[in-house]
Image (cartoon, rainbow, N blue to C red; front, side, top):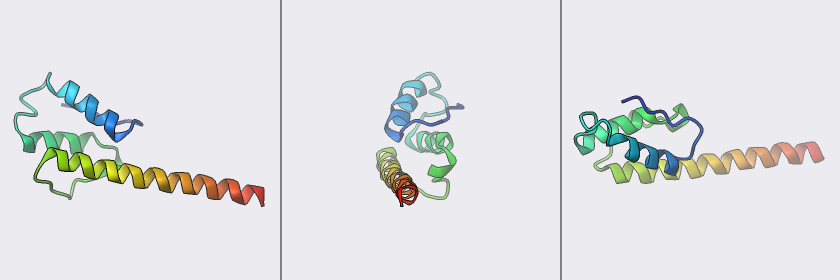
Length: 87
């Protein structure tokens, strides 16, 4: 299974992963396989390869938190850049 996150949110990525995984049941036969495939689909900024999770839902929750932090940092950097331009 070769699904990539591209430039979409984690929630949209989770939805797409769930939707598409039914077409490749042999790649996502159990929870562990689903987690491995989902990890592979994430963009590099969400690299969770070294992390282990007992359940897919916990991995989703952590990915959503990471996305929120990244979004806040990017928004802060954008604000900081604009503020510097105003000064």
